[in-house]
Image (cartoon, rainbow, N blue to C red; front, top):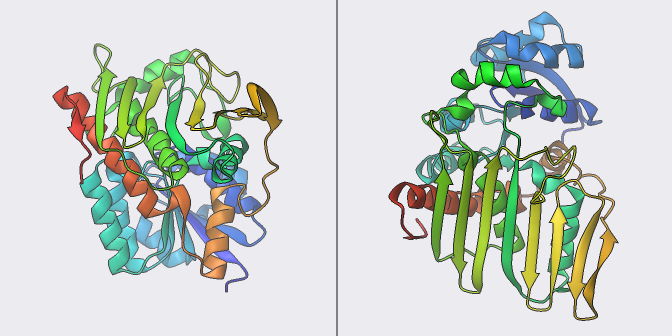
Length: 359
C-alpha cells in the first residue's frame, strides 16, 4: 500500500484536466509531479495553480514519465484519441484515470480493455456526474427498493456548449467561443466531437448503474446537426429495455449552464419505478420523491457524501491503496455497456432507423 502517490497529468485537450489535477493536489496522499501536453500553452494555468517548476512540464509524454516517475496518470485527451493514448501509456503498467467518455466507438473501447488487460493496468473512466450528491442519493434510494423495481430512466443533460467554460467552470465570452469553434476538436467529427458522443455516455453509463447492469434490447436515436457543423448539438435516444422505454437526451445550447442556473428542461435524471419516482437534478441540494405513502411527493435533502466518494481521485486512490476493483460507472465493464448504447444510438441516427443493441 502506497502512503503517497506521485501523479502526472497527460494530454490537456479536455478542459476537465484542470479540475482533476486540483483534486489530486488536494488529496492528502497525492503529489502532482508532472504535466504533459504537446501544446505547452494548455498546461500554463495548471502549472501556475499548482506552483510547479518549469522542469515539471513536458511536451514529450515519454520524457514526462521518465523524469517525473509518476505512480499513476490522469489522462484527458480528445475522445477520438482515447485508444491512442491508452496504447501509448499502458505498456508502462501505471494505473490510468481517463476522463469521460470511454471511447469514440465500441470497437475502440474493446481495444482499450484488451490493451489494459494485456499490460495488467488498473484503469477507470471518470464520469463527473457520478460525484454529484443528488445522483448518489438517488442511487441509494433505488438500491433500498423505495420506489420498487426501476422501470424507466429519463436523462436530459448538457450545457451552453463545451467552449463556454474552462477548468473550474470559468466562463468565457461569446466572442471567444465563436473564434475557437472552427478549430476545436469538440466540433470535429474525426476527433469524436458532438453532443451525442460528449454527453450521451453520461446518461447511458449512469443509467446502467441505476439499472444494475441491465442492457436495452433496441435503440432509436435522432440528432440535430446545425448548418455548417460536422457534428450534432442535440440528440434524443430511446432505449427499449425488457421493462419498458427509457430516454436519453443531450444538448449543447441550453439556455443556462446547470451549475449556475438550472435550464428548462432541468438537467439530470428522472427515475420511474413500480412503486414511486425520483427526480434528481444536477448540483441541486434536494431530490424529489413520490412513493406509495407520499403520492403527492416530497423534497429530501441530498446525502452528505464522505471520502472516498466525493470525487474520482479520492475513489481511484482508495481502490489502489486497498487493492479493490474499480466498480460502478467508472469500471470498464459498466462503461462498456454505456458505450454499447452510445454506439448503437450513433449508428441509429446515421442510418435513421431502430437498431438492435450492438455487441
